[in-house]
Image 1 (cartoon, rainbow, N blue to C red):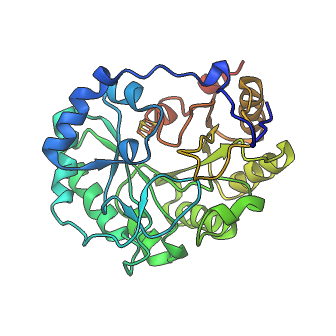
Image 2 (cartoon, rainbow, N blue to C red):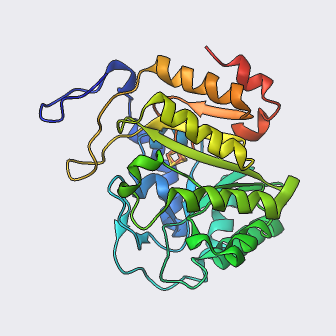
Length: 299
Ligand code: SF4
């Protein structure tokens, strides 16, 4: 469904999601008490009531201010705060209080820090694994400007999945401030090279920006070539009128086709639905790792 960007439009049926504020109240309260941010709240994720009601959340470390200014992202930008050493324990407290067996941790880009924040990812992960040994940790990292020492640090943290999102096809990289497609692919390659079988890599793509099917398939191939086996594909939704415009509402049939194509090319698990986000139902990627289960979901 192509959109006339000059006209007012209504979201198609498949994108009308019910939001229940009561479902997320308990989580909101706990997060406030513990004093940590989530990307769910900062990015105004449309899945928030669903995820919070299931006690799924993606914790945001290293503050809530990003040093880049991507034109599709709602996270605040500007001069970030000092790194807070207390958050190492705060995240673990939240994990323990929520009884989480699987947790996703991410950060804004912190280009102001020499290691891009990698050592904080390391400390937060180690602390969780030490105090909550039954919990598995997934990290969703920025590109650390491709610094190999930083990538080594997150690989050494004990995280079971390390994700880095390519976000879009190479032709649209102007919307990713200070990023490069080549570098993002290289980051995923380096994680796999350094982590081997101890770590799974994951990436995510937004669609609806005007990409073609062939361009998407080329990205799938680039990811497969660097050993990335987990992928999420979701509809881009502009946070407001000041952000990159949505060019198209991709139909559920096309999402299903992307999933089928990616699985046939060698991915082990693919979430490809309008509301899929890289951290959406993140625990499912490992539980369906054999691929067959995920293939059975193909419609
Ligand atoms: S999809 Fe991810 S970012 Fe969105 S609410 Fe769920 S856990 Fe948070």
